[in-house]
Amino acid sequence: MTLTDQYIFSLLSQFFWPFCRIGAFLMVVPIFGSRLIPIKIRLLLTIALTVMIAPQLTETPNIPIFSLSGFLHILSESLTGIVLGFWVYLLFQIGAVAGQFIALQNGMGFSVLIDPMNGTSTTVISQIFLLLTNLIFFILNGHLLVIQSLAESFDVLPFNPLFFDKAVYFSLASSLSWVFEFGLLLSLPAIVALLLVNLSMGVISKVTPQFNIFSVGFPFTILLGLIVLWVCLSQYISIFERSFSDVFLKIQQILLLWKT
Image (cartoon, rainbow, N blue to C red; front, top):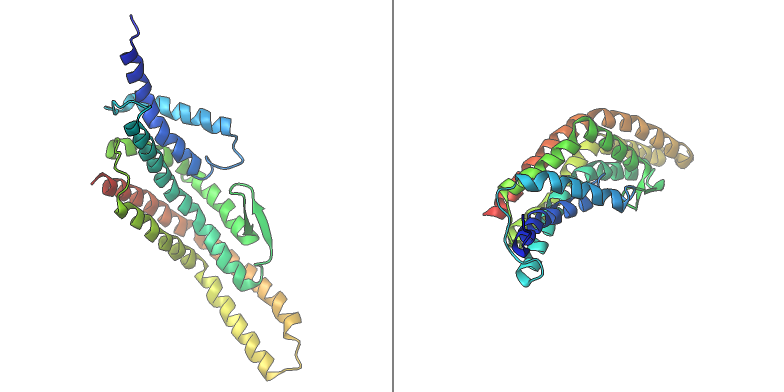
C-alpha cells in the first residue's frame, strides 16, 4: 500500500471539516464548554466525537485547507457549531433570567456570587436555578441529545460555505425574546406576589406614618420571596421540559433555514 499526497489530503479533509464544527460547538455549549473543564479534556472530547462522526459522513468537501476557499469553509463550519451551541446556551439562561427577576423583587439582588462555569456575577437565586438546570439536563439525557443533534446536523446541513444568510441572524436575535418569555413565565408568580406585598407596604406606610415599615417590610419581603421561590421551583421542571423540546425544534429549523 502506497501513501500518496492525494490520499493523505483526502483522509485529513474527512476529519478536519467535522472537527471545526464539533470544536466550535463544544466551545459554546454549556457544561462541555465550561471553564471548569480543562482545554485538554475538551480537545480530547472533540477528537473522540470527530473520530466517531466523520466515518459516517457520505461526503466531505475536497477543498485545500490552506487556501481562501478553505478559510471560508473553516469560518462556515465554526460559525455553524457556534450557532448550534448558542441555542443550548440560551436554554440554560432561562433559569438565570428568572432568578434575576425574582431577586430584584424580593430584595436579594445584592446577594451576588461568581458563577464558576461562566465566569460572571449572578445572584444566589440564579445560581439555584442554574444548578437545578444542570441536574434536570442530565436527568433528561440532554447531553446525549445534544451530541445526537450535532451528529444529525451533518445530514441536514452537510457543508455549506454560505454562512452570511441574514435570516439566520434575525432568527438568533429574535430568540432572545424566547429566553425572556420562559424566564418571565417561570418568575411570574413571584413577581405578582411580591408586587402585591410592596403595594400593601406602601398603603400601610401611608395609613400609619409612625410605623417603621423598613424594619418590618424588608424581612417579610425576603421571607415571602423564599416561599414563592419554593413554589416556582416546583413548576420549573415542567417549564424546562417544554423549553427543552423547543430548543431542539428550533435547532432543526435553523439548519433547514440555513440550508435553503
